Image (cartoon, rainbow, N blue to C red; front, side, top):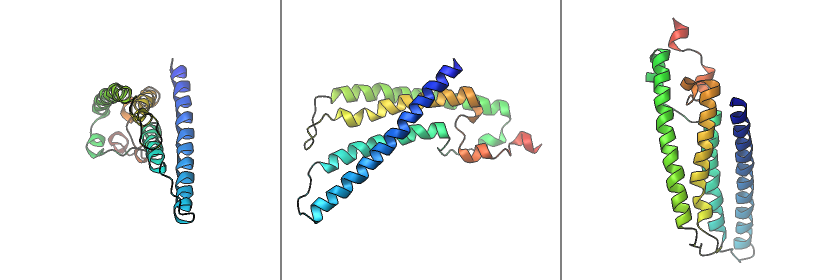
Amino acid sequence: MVRLLSRIDDTIAAVENALIWVCFAVVALVLFTAVIFRYVFNAPFTWTEELVTILFTWMVFLGASSCFRAHLHLRVEAFVRLLPRAAQIVLGLGAIAVMAVMLSVFVWHGLVYAFTVMDDRTPMLDISFSYAFFALPVTSAFAMVHILRVAIVEGIDRTFMSITEIGDDATPEARS
């Protein structure tokens, strides 16, 4: 079961990273091209703002999800690190539960909203607004998989540790 979860998580991570790079490349290319056409040819594109906004939205949400897997989110941990390991695990379980509830709400309401605006069209590109709004539920589901894998493989108390904490083994138990 852990191996299956790891494979799913690895696949999601690969897709996230590829999409982040594709979004970044397209945003850079579109913005560069838009500047050239606006200021050199005096023929601005009207649709670039919409496309860049949609791609940037996806890029930000994909990056936020990806950061759970890589321990790149910051957390305030001064109080937690002073507690015994058992208390750290209890607080870790609480944090995972709260995050699971929050991400579930994001998935549910994100899907509801994305389907609600499916028939609404953007003014310039004439595509559904839902392309942008699906970023929240999709990446929230990705984040749940990342968090579940980290909790199972690395341990509950390490689930929301930042990369700086993981590299620092100066826990209260190690000091005594």
